[in-house]
Image 1: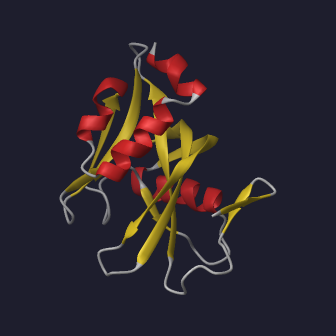
Image 2: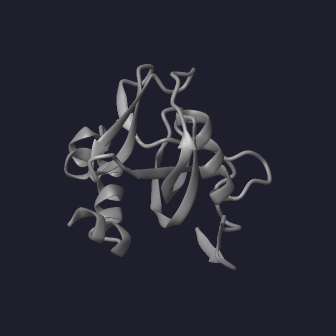
Image 3: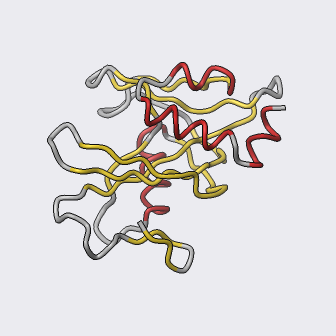
Length: 154
């Protein structure tokens, strides 16, 4: 991935079957002042992860991340900053790159849908252990090192 004018772009030499996706590490402050992060459960895959999905044609990574978060958890969010990338081989054998953004919640309400069965707002100290995939845990470690999150954790 390349950063061009503040936006991620796909390299020209990327494989033709590369899946491009985007998602969010969505945070909110609960009524008790505790910072929590949205983790989703997908029964069809038996995993806990962050909301994400494939980009639509012509969509930027940031646009796709905001759309996918809204579609999966029903919350309109604001991007705080780019958080990082994960890459792996999709279950159908294709390479996949997911660009994630740290987001804060503006408004919304979750309802189970065809992609997400549960939404859990998890306290910062428990997010890592909630996640199924090592790549999500590693991404969360990077997010926790961001100045915005270090201040939240203290």
